Amino acid sequence: MTGTTEILGRGHREGSVLFKNWFDGLSGAAERSEPSAYVFVMGSFVEVLRCFDLPVVFPEINSLQMAVRHVAHEYLNEAEDFGYSPDICGYVKADVAVQLRGGEHPAGRIPTPTLAVLTNACNTYIKWAEIWERLHGTRVFTLDVPGNRQAGPPSRPGSQDFETDRRYVEGQIRELIGTCEDVTGKRFDVDRLRQVLADCNTVSRSWKRIIELNRSRPAVFNSLTDGTVFLGVANGLRGTPEAARYFEDLVEELELKAEQGIGTRTEETYRLTFVGVPCYPIFRRFNELFTDWGGVFVNSTYLWFASGGTHLGFEYDLERPLASLAEGVLLSVRDAMDAMFQSNRVIGNMIEEFEIDGVVYHPIKSCRTVSTGLADSRRALIEKHDVPTLFMESDMMDKRVVSEAQLKNRADAFFEGLAARRLREARPQ
Image (cartoon, rainbow, N blue to C red; front, side, top):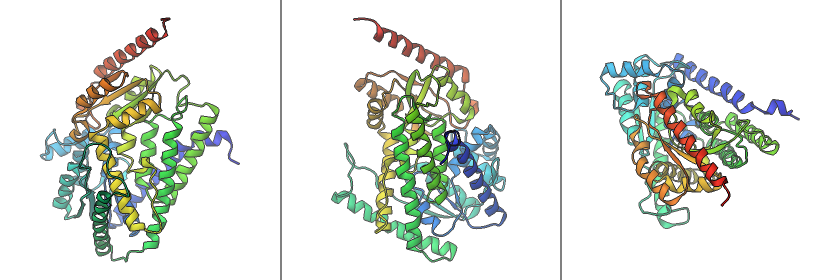
């Protein structure tokens, strides 16, 4: 039986190894000039691509890795010198520089895209793929996922509206399969798809349990830092046995921490939730602005819209793989879009379920999609919930617009307010 000391910290250790192996595999594919597929986290369709043994590249993950490794500015400057505006998404510009450098990346070499698969979940995806089409002649497959078309709860399986949309998505998935057969020269194997979906089910089931475990006090992981590691494995290795084993092991580790009261911090003073995308150019220091005050991010909308749907706990029906895949895509992409445009419902649930002391809103210059309306969302949340909030702006890629001193001042004032509030609540009435 695995000892406690071997289990604790295993998620980070194994996650780092899996990530390195993934990038090594991409470098090998680039060296051999093998066909590859570029995808995005919201509606990646990796499940289909695995059936054709296509190396899968996530440009979003590549770009954030540059920021975490403190070299993003070099790539951004190169793309801007090439003619791209400073106002364009930093993820896009960093990737453009990677393409101009022949795939050179701090984690390895990225293969040239043979096929790009994307959805309408983000308008930037469509324009981004057009860049690869112009640079490399990449074949682009855009799948239209119908969004929610009414206020209130979205339609769910069982309703006529949902079934109509599901059939529409399934028809496009069948077209994607035909495209993959044409690109690779391989025939589609439905039993291979079932195997991939089974591994996805394990990850999805485990991810749901992982999120639930952070309701414990103290929280067993930090959704901002640890959660980013988990997201990387969930997306990059989606549909693989390695990811399935990793997440089963991660559940074991976090359940052990919950049982023994082992938290991500020695002292957990404030439980927070995060809205938006992290500040990767100063990732470690950004997190310290909160942990230095005893703050821990126990959940975030980022774990919602950037998880490829795994947060839903949805499991594919292996008896009807294509129909079920369409159902899962429809649910996850819609949910991701709601996370960006109607986040208050889920944040309100987080406040109650995770006993949140404060909500941190982080709009970023690079992504208008995820940042637009956050000020209004914050105002609406305050009207419904008696919880302190912090609104701080920076970026996910561009250190030129990140002011650490300003961020620290705002964070310090926020925690001083939290401390004062707690003192008032502790006074005898």
